[in-house]
Amino acid sequence: MDDIAFEKEKGVIFIAAGLFYYFHFAEIKDLVVKLAERFPGGELIFDSGSKTGVAISNRMVVKTGNSGAKMYFYVSNPKALGAWSGRIKEVRALPYYGGIRREIRDCYRQWRIGTKLNMFFGDLLKMTKLIHIYFE
Image: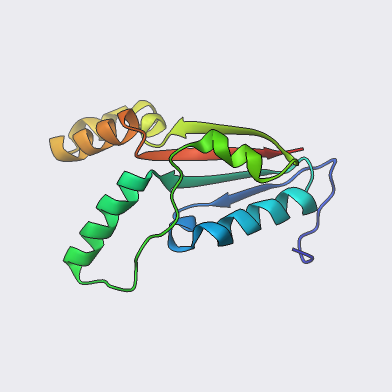
């Protein structure tokens, strides 16, 4: 963290895409707390699955024979992350696939029905989401 040139007036946004799944809950919580303390006014955006979503993903990974890619971290209640630190100002959760469906409609029309259903139900059941944390 010391290598990051940070000026509160300019802000900073951290993006962790497809990464946190592979760490344990305590490790992610520790990281978020440290980021909140070290980078006031900063933001963190990451994707997460629910407990059910991660369990389904892990079953699929096992079927492929890839035993080294087990997922551990999930967020079922994004608002609960706000209690991790007094320096967390706000937590927002957005549907993971919602923006894709709206922004690339032409491509989306060509996708298989199974893909479309997975995306629809993933958002509907909140099995996948984007989480945006704002630091105080």
